[in-house]
Amino acid sequence: MTKIIDGKRISAEIKDELREQAMKFKERGIEATLAVVQVGLDPASSIYVRNKKKACEYVGIRSLSYELAEETTEEELLSLIEKLNKDNAVSGILVQLPLPAHICEKHILDAISPAKDVDCFHPENVGKMCLGEPGFLPCTPAGVVELLKREGIEIAGKECVVIGRSNIVGKPASMMMLRENATVTIAHSRTKDLREVTKRADILIVAVGKPLMIDDSYVKEGAVVIDVGIHRNAENKVCGDVDYDKVAPKCSAITPVPGGVGPMTIAMLMRNCLSTIIDK
Ligand code: NAD
Image (cartoon, rainbow, N blue to C red; front, side, top):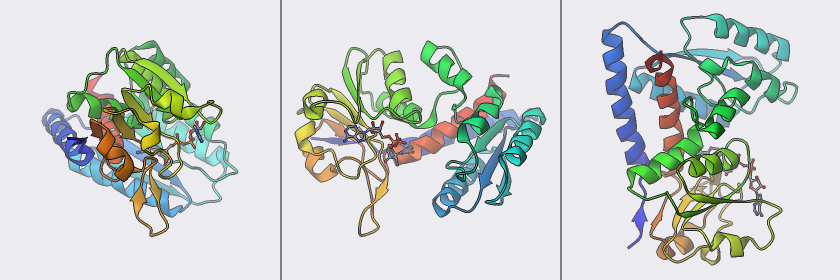
Protein backbone atom coordinates (compact mmCIF):
# COMPACT_ATOMS: atom_id res chain seq x y z
CA MET A 1 0.00 0.00 0.00
CA THR A 2 1.37 3.40 -0.93
CA LYS A 3 1.39 5.94 1.88
CA ILE A 4 0.14 9.34 0.75
CA ILE A 5 2.08 11.96 2.67
CA ASP A 6 -0.45 14.56 3.79
CA GLY A 7 1.40 17.88 3.81
CA LYS A 8 -1.79 19.76 4.51
CA ARG A 9 -2.39 17.89 7.78
CA ILE A 10 1.26 17.97 8.86
CA SER A 11 1.62 21.69 8.11
CA ALA A 12 -1.57 22.38 10.11
CA GLU A 13 -0.11 20.45 13.07
CA ILE A 14 3.10 22.48 12.86
CA LYS A 15 1.21 25.78 12.70
CA ASP A 16 -0.79 24.75 15.79
CA GLU A 17 2.45 23.97 17.65
CA LEU A 18 3.90 27.33 16.62
CA ARG A 19 0.70 29.13 17.60
CA GLU A 20 1.00 27.70 21.10
CA GLN A 21 4.62 28.83 21.35
CA ALA A 22 3.73 32.28 20.02
CA MET A 23 0.96 32.58 22.61
CA LYS A 24 3.40 31.82 25.44
CA PHE A 25 5.76 34.52 24.17
CA LYS A 26 2.91 36.99 23.84
CA GLU A 27 2.04 36.45 27.51
CA ARG A 28 5.54 37.70 28.26
CA GLY A 29 5.02 40.66 25.94
CA ILE A 30 7.24 39.30 23.15
CA GLU A 31 5.90 39.16 19.60
CA ALA A 32 7.50 38.31 16.25
CA THR A 33 6.93 40.83 13.45
CA LEU A 34 7.39 39.96 9.79
CA ALA A 35 7.78 42.75 7.23
CA VAL A 36 6.48 41.52 3.87
CA VAL A 37 7.67 43.50 0.87
CA GLN A 38 6.09 43.12 -2.57
CA VAL A 39 7.10 45.13 -5.62
CA GLY A 40 4.53 45.31 -8.40
CA LEU A 41 1.29 43.39 -8.73
CA ASP A 42 2.25 39.97 -10.12
CA PRO A 43 -0.98 37.99 -9.47
CA ALA A 44 0.84 34.77 -8.39
CA SER A 45 3.00 36.79 -5.96
CA SER A 46 -0.09 38.48 -4.55
CA ILE A 47 -1.59 35.06 -3.77
CA TYR A 48 1.64 33.88 -2.09
CA VAL A 49 1.87 37.09 -0.05
CA ARG A 50 -1.77 36.83 1.01
CA ASN A 51 -1.27 33.20 2.14
CA LYS A 52 1.85 34.13 4.12
CA LYS A 53 0.04 36.96 5.89
CA LYS A 54 -2.92 34.66 6.63
CA ALA A 55 -0.54 32.11 8.17
CA CYS A 56 1.08 34.86 10.27
CA GLU A 57 -2.31 35.88 11.58
CA TYR A 58 -3.17 32.29 12.49
CA VAL A 59 0.11 31.60 14.26
CA GLY A 60 0.17 34.95 16.07
CA ILE A 61 2.95 36.73 14.19
CA ARG A 62 2.40 40.41 13.44
CA SER A 63 2.81 41.16 9.72
CA LEU A 64 3.53 44.53 8.15
CA SER A 65 2.82 45.05 4.44
CA TYR A 66 4.94 47.08 2.09
CA GLU A 67 3.28 47.12 -1.32
CA LEU A 68 5.53 49.06 -3.66
CA ALA A 69 4.84 50.20 -7.21
CA GLU A 70 6.28 48.24 -10.15
CA GLU A 71 8.51 51.23 -11.05
CA THR A 72 10.19 51.35 -7.60
CA THR A 73 13.96 51.69 -8.13
CA GLU A 74 16.60 49.38 -6.69
CA GLU A 75 17.88 52.29 -4.56
CA GLU A 76 14.42 52.91 -3.11
CA LEU A 77 13.99 49.23 -2.26
CA LEU A 78 17.48 49.07 -0.72
CA SER A 79 16.71 52.07 1.43
CA LEU A 80 13.46 50.45 2.69
CA ILE A 81 15.40 47.28 3.56
CA GLU A 82 18.01 49.34 5.38
CA LYS A 83 15.23 50.99 7.39
CA LEU A 84 13.67 47.59 8.24
CA ASN A 85 17.09 46.15 9.17
CA LYS A 86 17.52 48.93 11.73
CA ASP A 87 13.96 48.78 13.08
CA ASN A 88 14.02 46.82 16.36
CA ALA A 89 10.27 46.26 16.12
CA VAL A 90 10.80 44.16 12.94
CA SER A 91 12.19 40.66 13.60
CA GLY A 92 11.90 39.19 10.07
CA ILE A 93 12.01 40.57 6.52
CA LEU A 94 10.62 38.83 3.45
CA VAL A 95 10.93 40.22 -0.07
CA GLN A 96 8.55 38.37 -2.37
CA LEU A 97 10.23 37.09 -5.55
CA PRO A 98 10.36 37.53 -8.47
CA LEU A 99 11.25 41.22 -8.49
CA PRO A 100 10.74 43.39 -11.60
CA ALA A 101 13.55 42.91 -14.13
CA HIS A 102 15.16 46.32 -13.45
CA ILE A 103 15.96 45.31 -9.84
CA CYS A 104 18.85 42.93 -9.15
CA GLU A 105 17.53 40.19 -6.83
CA LYS A 106 20.98 39.38 -5.50
CA HIS A 107 21.61 43.00 -4.43
CA ILE A 108 18.33 42.99 -2.54
CA LEU A 109 18.64 39.57 -0.89
CA ASP A 110 22.23 40.29 0.17
CA ALA A 111 21.08 43.56 1.78
CA ILE A 112 18.66 41.87 4.19
CA SER A 113 20.22 41.52 7.63
CA PRO A 114 21.14 37.81 8.09
CA ALA A 115 19.44 37.94 11.52
CA LYS A 116 16.11 38.86 9.86
CA ASP A 117 16.47 36.70 6.72
CA VAL A 118 13.52 34.33 7.32
CA ASP A 119 13.68 32.97 3.74
CA CYS A 120 17.30 31.90 4.38
CA PHE A 121 18.58 33.31 1.08
CA HIS A 122 21.48 35.39 2.46
CA PRO A 123 24.90 33.82 1.67
CA GLU A 124 25.81 33.91 5.38
CA ASN A 125 22.76 31.83 6.30
CA VAL A 126 23.21 29.48 3.32
CA GLY A 127 26.83 28.99 4.45
CA LYS A 128 25.74 28.22 8.02
CA MET A 129 23.19 25.71 6.73
CA CYS A 130 25.90 23.98 4.65
CA LEU A 131 28.25 23.90 7.64
CA GLY A 132 25.53 22.44 9.86
CA GLU A 133 25.57 25.47 12.18
CA PRO A 134 22.39 26.60 13.93
CA GLY A 135 20.31 29.23 12.14
CA PHE A 136 17.50 29.65 9.67
CA LEU A 137 16.76 26.80 7.26
CA PRO A 138 15.48 27.38 3.71
CA CYS A 139 11.70 26.92 3.82
CA THR A 140 10.90 24.49 0.97
CA PRO A 141 13.81 22.07 1.59
CA ALA A 142 13.15 22.25 5.35
CA GLY A 143 9.54 21.35 4.58
CA VAL A 144 10.69 18.28 2.63
CA VAL A 145 12.88 17.05 5.50
CA GLU A 146 10.16 17.76 8.07
CA LEU A 147 7.62 15.74 6.05
CA LEU A 148 9.99 12.76 5.94
CA LYS A 149 10.73 12.98 9.66
CA ARG A 150 7.13 13.38 10.75
CA GLU A 151 6.12 10.41 8.60
CA GLY A 152 8.81 8.34 10.33
CA ILE A 153 10.74 7.76 7.08
CA GLU A 154 14.36 6.96 7.85
CA ILE A 155 16.84 9.20 6.03
CA ALA A 156 20.24 8.19 7.45
CA GLY A 157 22.13 5.83 5.16
CA LYS A 158 19.49 6.02 2.42
CA GLU A 159 20.28 6.71 -1.25
CA CYS A 160 18.72 10.09 -1.96
CA VAL A 161 18.57 11.57 -5.46
CA VAL A 162 17.55 15.21 -5.87
CA ILE A 163 16.55 16.28 -9.39
CA GLY A 164 17.31 20.00 -9.74
CA ARG A 165 20.14 22.21 -8.54
CA SER A 166 18.47 25.61 -8.10
CA ASN A 167 19.60 27.82 -5.22
CA ILE A 168 16.08 27.86 -3.80
CA VAL A 169 15.25 24.14 -3.87
CA GLY A 170 17.64 21.58 -5.37
CA LYS A 171 20.98 22.69 -3.86
CA PRO A 172 19.73 23.38 -0.31
CA ALA A 173 17.55 20.22 -0.34
CA SER A 174 20.67 18.19 -1.19
CA MET A 175 22.65 19.81 1.62
CA MET A 176 19.87 19.24 4.12
CA MET A 177 19.56 15.57 3.18
CA LEU A 178 23.33 15.29 3.59
CA ARG A 179 22.97 16.85 7.06
CA GLU A 180 20.50 14.05 7.79
CA ASN A 181 23.16 11.51 6.74
CA ALA A 182 21.65 10.38 3.43
CA THR A 183 23.97 9.44 0.56
CA VAL A 184 23.06 12.23 -1.83
CA THR A 185 23.25 12.52 -5.62
CA ILE A 186 22.23 15.72 -7.40
CA ALA A 187 20.86 15.25 -10.92
CA HIS A 188 20.30 18.20 -13.25
CA SER A 189 19.77 19.24 -16.86
CA ARG A 190 23.25 18.01 -17.88
CA THR A 191 22.94 14.61 -16.16
CA LYS A 192 23.51 11.77 -18.61
CA ASP A 193 20.98 8.97 -18.39
CA LEU A 194 18.75 10.49 -15.73
CA ARG A 195 16.72 7.29 -15.28
CA GLU A 196 19.82 5.28 -14.43
CA VAL A 197 20.55 7.78 -11.63
CA THR A 198 17.01 8.23 -10.30
CA LYS A 199 16.32 4.48 -10.20
CA ARG A 200 19.01 4.16 -7.51
CA ALA A 201 17.02 6.39 -5.17
CA ASP A 202 15.39 5.16 -1.97
CA ILE A 203 14.22 8.76 -1.59
CA LEU A 204 13.64 10.75 -4.79
CA ILE A 205 13.18 14.52 -4.41
CA VAL A 206 11.89 16.07 -7.63
CA ALA A 207 12.41 19.81 -8.21
CA VAL A 208 12.82 19.82 -11.97
CA GLY A 209 10.21 22.48 -12.78
CA LYS A 210 8.67 20.45 -15.65
CA PRO A 211 5.02 19.40 -15.29
CA LEU A 212 4.50 15.61 -14.97
CA MET A 213 8.01 14.86 -16.33
CA ILE A 214 8.80 12.08 -13.87
CA ASP A 215 6.82 8.91 -14.60
CA ASP A 216 7.20 5.38 -13.23
CA SER A 217 10.15 4.64 -15.54
CA TYR A 218 12.33 6.94 -13.35
CA VAL A 219 11.38 5.35 -10.04
CA LYS A 220 12.59 2.26 -8.17
CA GLU A 221 9.93 -0.07 -6.75
CA GLY A 222 9.25 0.92 -3.13
CA ALA A 223 10.94 4.35 -3.31
CA VAL A 224 9.72 7.42 -1.41
CA VAL A 225 8.91 10.22 -3.88
CA ILE A 226 8.72 13.88 -2.86
CA ASP A 227 7.33 16.19 -5.54
CA VAL A 228 8.31 19.84 -5.06
CA GLY A 229 6.94 21.02 -8.43
CA ILE A 230 3.88 23.25 -8.73
CA HIS A 231 2.26 23.97 -12.09
CA ARG A 232 -1.11 24.56 -13.63
CA ASN A 233 -2.02 22.20 -16.46
CA ALA A 234 -4.04 22.98 -19.60
CA GLU A 235 -7.30 22.61 -17.61
CA ASN A 236 -5.95 25.09 -15.01
CA LYS A 237 -5.61 22.26 -12.47
CA VAL A 238 -2.60 22.23 -10.12
CA CYS A 239 -0.09 19.45 -10.80
CA GLY A 240 3.50 18.63 -9.91
CA ASP A 241 6.72 17.54 -11.62
CA VAL A 242 5.74 13.90 -10.99
CA ASP A 243 3.11 12.00 -12.95
CA TYR A 244 1.33 10.99 -9.76
CA ASP A 245 -1.09 8.43 -11.24
CA LYS A 246 1.73 6.46 -12.86
CA VAL A 247 4.25 6.79 -10.02
CA ALA A 248 2.09 6.36 -6.88
CA PRO A 249 1.40 2.61 -7.33
CA LYS A 250 5.14 1.94 -7.51
CA CYS A 251 6.25 3.81 -4.36
CA SER A 252 6.12 3.14 -0.65
CA ALA A 253 5.21 6.81 -0.02
CA ILE A 254 4.52 9.88 -2.14
CA THR A 255 3.51 13.52 -1.73
CA PRO A 256 0.50 14.68 -3.75
CA VAL A 257 0.30 18.05 -5.53
CA PRO A 258 -1.49 20.03 -4.25
CA GLY A 259 -1.37 19.17 -0.55
CA GLY A 260 2.20 17.86 -0.26
CA VAL A 261 5.29 20.06 -0.08
CA GLY A 262 3.45 23.33 -0.89
CA PRO A 263 1.76 23.92 2.49
CA MET A 264 4.97 22.90 4.29
CA THR A 265 6.88 25.84 2.81
CA ILE A 266 4.67 28.35 4.63
CA ALA A 267 4.76 26.33 7.86
CA MET A 268 8.58 26.40 7.76
CA LEU A 269 8.50 30.13 7.05
CA MET A 270 6.38 30.58 10.18
CA ARG A 271 8.90 28.49 12.13
CA ASN A 272 11.73 30.74 10.93
CA CYS A 273 9.71 33.87 11.82
CA LEU A 274 9.07 32.65 15.34
CA SER A 275 12.71 31.63 15.78
CA THR A 276 13.65 35.32 15.41
CA ILE A 277 12.28 35.90 18.91
CA ILE A 278 12.82 32.43 20.41
CA ASP A 279 16.54 32.43 19.70
CA LYS A 280 17.04 35.79 21.41
P1 NAD B 1 14.39 25.91 -11.50
O1 NAD B 1 13.80 26.01 -12.86
O2 NAD B 1 15.18 27.04 -10.95
O3 NAD B 1 15.34 24.63 -11.46
C1 NAD B 1 15.03 23.42 -12.10
C2 NAD B 1 16.23 22.50 -12.02
O4 NAD B 1 15.90 21.30 -12.73
C3 NAD B 1 17.49 23.06 -12.64
O5 NAD B 1 18.52 23.01 -11.68
C4 NAD B 1 17.79 22.16 -13.83
O6 NAD B 1 19.17 21.81 -13.90
C5 NAD B 1 16.98 20.91 -13.56
N1 NAD B 1 16.44 20.37 -14.80
C6 NAD B 1 15.73 21.01 -15.74
N2 NAD B 1 15.42 20.17 -16.76
C7 NAD B 1 15.94 18.97 -16.44
C8 NAD B 1 15.94 17.71 -17.08
N3 NAD B 1 15.34 17.51 -18.25
N4 NAD B 1 16.59 16.69 -16.46
C9 NAD B 1 17.19 16.87 -15.26
N5 NAD B 1 17.20 18.05 -14.61
C10 NAD B 1 16.59 19.09 -15.20
O7 NAD B 1 13.19 25.52 -10.52
P2 NAD B 1 13.08 25.62 -8.92
O8 NAD B 1 12.94 27.03 -8.51
O9 NAD B 1 14.12 24.78 -8.28
O10 NAD B 1 11.66 24.92 -8.72
C11 NAD B 1 11.42 23.59 -9.10
C12 NAD B 1 9.94 23.31 -9.01
O11 NAD B 1 9.52 23.47 -7.66
C13 NAD B 1 9.06 24.25 -9.82
O12 NAD B 1 7.97 23.52 -10.31
C14 NAD B 1 8.60 25.28 -8.82
O13 NAD B 1 7.35 25.85 -9.15
C15 NAD B 1 8.48 24.42 -7.59
N6 NAD B 1 8.63 25.13 -6.30
C16 NAD B 1 7.77 24.80 -5.32
C17 NAD B 1 7.87 25.38 -4.08
C18 NAD B 1 6.92 24.98 -2.99
O14 NAD B 1 6.70 25.73 -2.06
N7 NAD B 1 6.38 23.77 -3.06
C19 NAD B 1 8.87 26.32 -3.82
C20 NAD B 1 9.78 26.63 -4.84
C21 NAD B 1 9.64 26.01 -6.08
